[in-house]
Image (cartoon, rainbow, N blue to C red; front, side):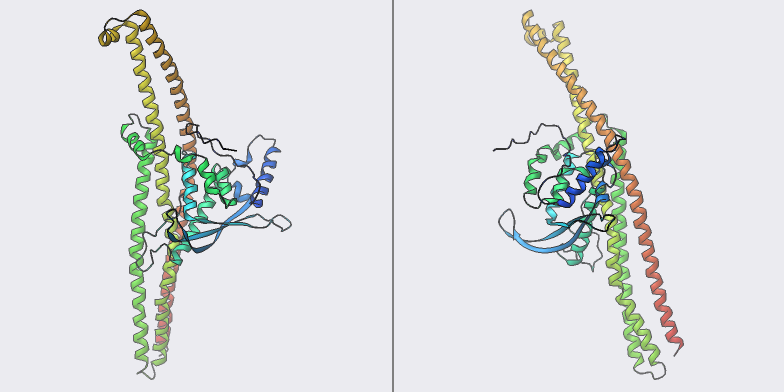
Length: 442
């Protein structure tokens, strides 16, 4: 039986979450339980849209990364990394929980999921994916996207992306997201059947809207400028951090020279030898500790990078509003033009200028056609106005949610980074304190 192809003109509708058969028993049971609870809620509030709906019912993790070899679309051999997604229900009071569901996904499938969410939820600040290739790294860290350390950091970033979506009050209910966690085979085909690619706005159209909108919304204009500035500030911060990391790496490693010199010196001293040898050992430990310190520091940098990419998500919402405003202004201009034509036809001015004398029947027919077009244009303009107001309302609600999240996350990340620096300095003081004691005993 043939399936009806998706209608590219159909208005965007979020795909609601519906428990399906097959794999994903953990999620299906959680959804069924929450749905039943929703029906029994006499308050009339849809509890499935509450924050952290998924995270209250299930645990989502990207637990492993595995290097694989396969064939790409061009039938050429390629090496890629697959990530194991595991979902399990939160344990019940008796300590029991159902079995874990798991499946493997490539990075490109995460990208496909996010592209779908961007199209179907244009008013939402969609969480970003971690970087595909490392940027803003200190020079001793590999930027190879197959490097084990980088793959591990990207694994953490992909897990964070899923948790962000699962904790979003709207995105968490999307059917395609549900299938991403439960349906390993044919998931790409299911996404493509939604026809989301046909609904994606072209770059040229977005560029035209940016330059041709006559009455842009001041709030979205300011938000766009803020996102540009946020991206610029975080980029500079990450560059500074990378330069500081390079210098710290050099300073720590140079301390290894103290260890070598003290060890060589101890060989020619009888009474001072033990003290010099011990001090040299402390210097060697200090020099080698910087590798682990800077690798741990990269995780804090990744938290900042997430908001570097969030800036683009903010701009995506602004671009969508510009497009809607451009369509609205174009519809209003077209309607005004038709009304003017109708008025001139009714008075005979335009007809005489363009076509000379015209029979009354012909003129009436033209007026009737224009009146029908005007009526249709008024309805279209009314519909676009309602759509625009609804978009603005939903967008600003989500932007406010994002602001609270951003302030909380960046505050936590910066405090953690400061605590790490303090701890690193304390360890350096301890090393020199130990060396001092070694020298005192000589």
